[in-house]
Amino acid sequence: MRPFLIIGESILDVIEGSGTRRALPGGSPANVAAGLGRLGHDVGLWTHLGADPAGDLLRDHLTASGVRLLAPITGVTSQARAEIQPDGSARYAFAVEWPRWPDGPAATETAIHLHTGSIAALLEPGAGDVGKLLSERRAITTISYDPNIRPALAGEPDACRARVEALVAVSDVVKASDEDLEWLYPGIPALDVARRWQASGPALVGVTLGAHGAFAVTGNAHVVVPPVKVTVADTVGAGDSFMSGLLDALRERHLLGAGARPRLRAVTAGDLGRVLSHAALVAAITVSRAGAAPPTREELPV
Image (cartoon, rainbow, N blue to C red; front, side, top):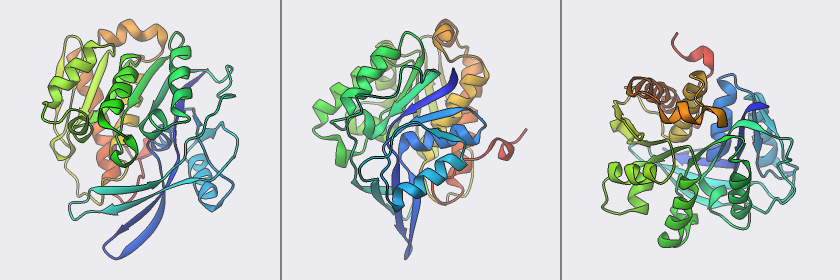
């Protein structure tokens, strides 16, 4: 049983800004998989890639990052245009498809931990298969979820909110950004939303705050960590790298896997702070260079 199985989209990000244009690998779940692979984990990715140049680029990137690709090659590879703003943030426009995949992943593709999120968990016709898989696998694996809302693809907010809340409730670890929460719950403080989500099922809910750090809540703790100070190249993939770092640190402490659920729920504030600090460091290294380029294990301080 491999440590990680990731379910979700791979997207070619066409990044424009300051008079330049670059085509880089992207897609939130694929970024999480690449981040875990670069940190040395055995990670499998069920995704959608076509037999086209964009798919070739993404396959090369993912396999070079140590990711095992599990799905057949079909259709057309999804793409997004990311326009970098003066503050380094990214604004997106999408040409994405997420088809049904009733034959996969195979029952033999099991993992200690399953992660999903973003477009794949919301965009039909494939989103229904994602939800079904989480329900089927929850007894044998822990689950993490990052809504990573893309307003252009999220549809009507009330329907999106209901689906997100259903996915949160079956997850053990949830990570969202303050921007996600503001879109889903306008005017409601992020901490209030995180506590509401945590009470619905997850052991841990983390929220990234951009340049202001991050916080997480459990049933008995609320921990805040400051940002790691770096010169920001752009924020593409920052939240995904945070997620990779979060899962890496939880795995290091033996807090993932169905048998670890009681330990995960009992995580101390001290351990939670160290987990969040590690995730923040991984994200900081990523934003210090262009594109979603998460660090390897060797690039982390000892």
